[in-house]
Image (cartoon, rainbow, N blue to C red):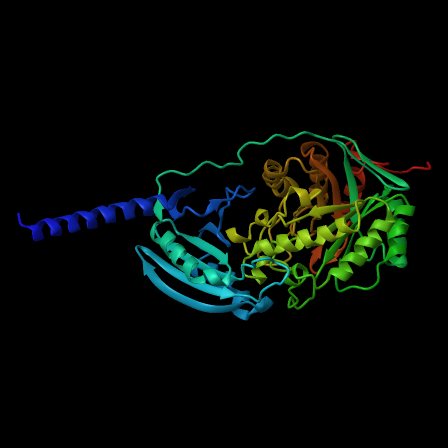
Amino acid sequence: MNKKTVVLLLLIFCFFMGETVLAQEQDLAEKTYQFKNISFSLPASYQKDTTKFEDIALSFSGSETTLRVFIQPLNNQLTVDSYINYGNKQLELGKANFKIIEKRNYVLNEYKVVEIAYYRPLIPTIEKDQNFYRELHLFDAQENRVITFWAKTVGANYVQVKNELNKAARSLTRLTYYTPNPFSAFTFKNKPIVYEGEKIRLEIPVNKVLWGRFYPEVPFSDYYYQQMLNTEKSLNHKFEFIMTYKNFPNTGDFPAQAIKRVYDEGRVLMLTLQPFTPDLNWIAIPEIVAGVHDAKIREWALGLKNINEPVFVRPFNEMNGDWDPWCAWFFGKDTDLYIQAWRHFVDIFREVGANNVLFVWNPHDRSYPDFVWNNAHLYYPGDDYVDWVGLTGYNNGTSHPGDVWREFDEIYEPLYFDYLKRYSDKPFMITEFSSNEIGGDKAAWLEKGMASLATKYPNIKIATWFDGRDGLWQYELNSSPAAWESFKKGLTNEGFIKGAVTKKSD
């Protein structure tokens, strides 16, 4: 063997050894994850986040990047096209100044892929704002589902994340088994509720429910307030918990006198604050994160602090509904922006010392669109930022095409246990609910529902009836004499408390 041959063999050996070392380094640089019945690989620099929605989606944090994986089942009503097209409808319209910069269709292995990239303006209050987005939707015809890789990152990582997502998609493999649900078990301790203010005390003992009521324009209209008082006499029941709405932060002066009146009469108030316009064109969440409305938020925080009584505040409710422009459908599926807005809002209240304010986080029981990326739990702001968890589900009856009559337990039993296994340390309230008159027997619905509420759901401490008409939905208590009498009788159930609010001077 001559010298040239030896050198060539050494070079070939070094080449293959180098390739082997490189392959080993690549193997070490990636990690494989399992989710339901798929597996995929990501760079080892990504860390899986521990969240309350690990059974819904997997979330990862990388170097200035957030990545999530969703699996969306399809059916006869939901096709791959309707899932992608409706899910991106507001993105296509440029809502909240989101702009699509790339969109393409191709085939990867056995999957048809839709890849979309987009961005939004930087929010100056977010350090290293991840304002560039990319999503890959892989249609799995065999399982009739879409597997979505969704990521956001800083602009400098744009190309890198594109390559990482495509590599993750190429690594996708089906499994013959499902990974277990991490929220299959929970513990729950039934606790009493006690809050004290300057003049009043709110106390709800264990296994008791306090009734609340929404009555239109109360407490801001003297006329409707008197109407409500008249109906209380007829029902022989004082509603000690009042819920109301305010458009916010685009609203008038702080209504101090109206709120004080509630407490002077021995009641407690829940304010539902909504950045809403009927045309759904005002997407306020990015503005709130950016601090645009800090002055108005601080004004209300100081106003509520000066009430010096326990006040419930329900901001940005039913965020998983496409009828509300604080739904992530309007801002690139980025539920993190909702969470940042919520936390910023709460932080201002804490900065001014409004410790008497209790924050109620409240999705709707059904998501619209009913897509995995819009699941209610993805909007949860964190235990440190939520005092109460709100449940909302209506029996819509059959007034509209697509409406379905649902009994009380049909709505609340699955909702209650789903929330309990995730938020068992938080008290629950039904923030608003009602039954339509059309499509069934409302009086019977009330009789069965109120009996069930009084006994089956110990962590529901407050239940608030929406006593008003909503278009064709006849939600009023007096929608029929039979419904009125049924509710009146139900209020006498020993599981419902009277006298939960007391004045300290009494």
